[in-house]
Image 1: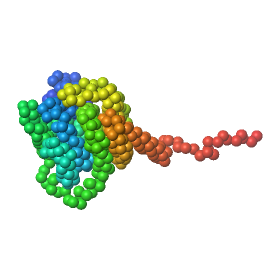
Image 2: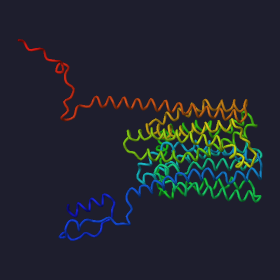
Image 3: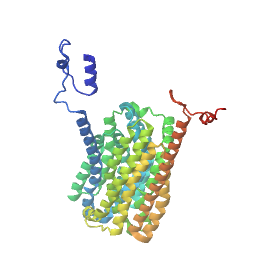
Image 4: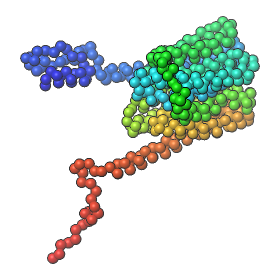
Length: 481
């Protein structure tokens, strides 16, 4: 083996080379010995996997914990009316933000996993321009509606709605797709947690309620700016988007946008719909919905990891196989999370809301079932159906959930209070999951049938005898005597 062959071998295996020895030495003396300080490739991969997983876990945990830093201070200092106004503003603002987000988190996450860094920056700039185009009027309308529906604290509800809507402009979906959750943590989640914690200190010390709203708004405004800086977005990237291209992008994002709009009707607007059914159900439903969303944020960690794991595969068939496995993993995790939620939500509600909310056992069980269904549908829709190229089916599943969920939440709230509204929410989530699984099953069967037809139509390869003519395969008649 020559010195060049040794160099290629060690370079391929990632081991640093020592200075080459004279070719006159025997072969054993010229063999390069790996440096003791260089870690094996398997160890490096393991450390990287642990680092990525820790980042994915830290992001939703901090995102879920950050509201807890202020909610006890709000309820203890200003009571139920203040918490209801904050919840209403978040509901309306999140609904507007879902519309303004245009589905980039669904359609773009797997796309950026295969893009070059410069193209990622351009895509994020394009997302910011399109979100601003839709978000300015929609979020403004949500802020006005929040002020009108929360007369006790109109300014605070309006600012919370703005913060919840603008928060959808952040670049977390890019960092999830590229499997760099620590950047998500630094640019969005950690600053929000720090600001919310500071507002909790201010409110506990007797400060105004508007401190919490201002903290949310400031965190929402800083997140997209920090994301643009980290991704290397240039001013020219924001200015080169023509109106024709904007319209083309909006048409392309229509399926993902439809999914977000329909989902927001029974998720983000659930508190508003339950309030219209019965104002007495608002406290229980809003509190349980907050616990559900925080748990969902925590469970989004493995789902985000699955998105990046599936999206990095170039071969479409292998990507679909990974996506099917991702749904199975998500279903198992959902059962575990749902059981934990059903057992722990009554205690968590007493601690988080300063004893102002009592969760009955029926509400806890309904919440646990909703968590199990939501965790599975996050993978069946945003991972499997996206990998199959059927974002239109994700939109249809969300529409089915909205058609079922809105009237059932409204009627359930009017007849059964908060527990009835939670039953309507569970029905909506179950319909979404059932539709997605049926659509994925149809798409997988079509893919398998197309693959079999393609294999049957291919000519035989060299050396393959090929199918014989029926006459050639028939037995020869006996020879005449």
